[in-house]
Image 1 (cartoon, helix red, strand yellow):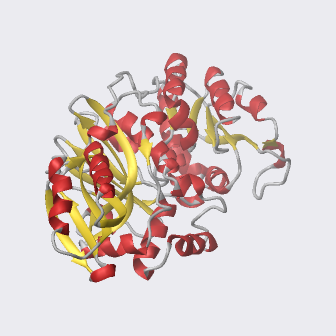
Image 2: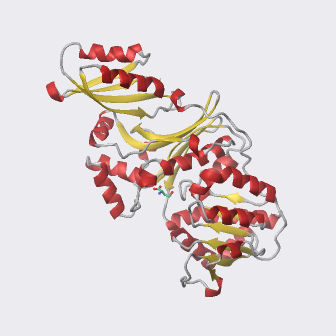
Image 3: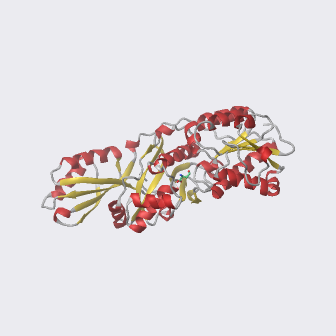
Length: 434
Ligand code: HSE
């Protein structure tokens, strides 16, 4: 990378909530940013979709020609805050090919194309940073890449979607339904009008793909991250969780398996004493377990314009420092291609609840279904009597494949009226986490 002398020139793509806060900092806190980077930092331009006046921004800096802005040759760092795959991918690629470093908050782009974009960044000798793409303001990618570079991360367990965390929190507090909590989240601005990406688990899966790559220096295609959402969670699941001393959370896990790496997202029962149970409302929380460091918890605001601009500006300052020093950007290597462990081989304790006929011998028939499939039971609880009888069982760690067979076997019994739900329990570091 060429050493930059004189002012560093920054181009912004997008002026939404995060873009506006980033522009405000660049114009309003220029002296402070210059001290941090070692050179003046100037706004070279802002690309927007439709021409408009931007408060506090010189009109001559505003353009609708994003491609022209990123390729004009005098831009040191491009900050991409438009989101989505295209035109973001083309613009980021063109910017790097024109010699600019790139900061982005675009989790969809990095989850889908991060491996290729890192290759381009390495080839061009420019920086590519995206702390804001995972957990908003919460620093976790840089700690994994830099602070833990001499350690060996073993597992990352996270609540990385604030919308679903808010909804599940409201359901636990109110005893209400998913739909009721979703409407409240939308009214308060925590959920989008179309909340599909959040409630389906897809948003969290994209973030876990990114976390897994950085934690384990491996290429991990987004398609390899299995995910399940929270739309089927109801008040009875919340009540079962409570009876087991747990809360329900949408949890993403990536870990080293004996033969590779696995990443997945699903609702889980989280014991109330677990660090992730204390992640409330729309916050995010990420627990990193590393061989030497042990457990490290990162917790804070996972979204919001001002909070997310903190992560964007942190990356921006770091990439500016690299240019001032003339250092080649220290890219994530992602050089290994670890095998992706099949999800069916990951073991977890499961909570299974079902309505049953309340008569002698039912329990032994049900427990035989578990025993015949090699699944051991930890606890069995009956609630209600007669036609209202409901059994709630907790298993010892068992694979998804074994639990699928158990549920099929339970469905064949005449005494089970409905297999209601199977939900994994989050374990501790001394046992499989799920
Ligand atoms: N929609 C995300 C969430 C925030 O609810 O956490 C942006 O990644």
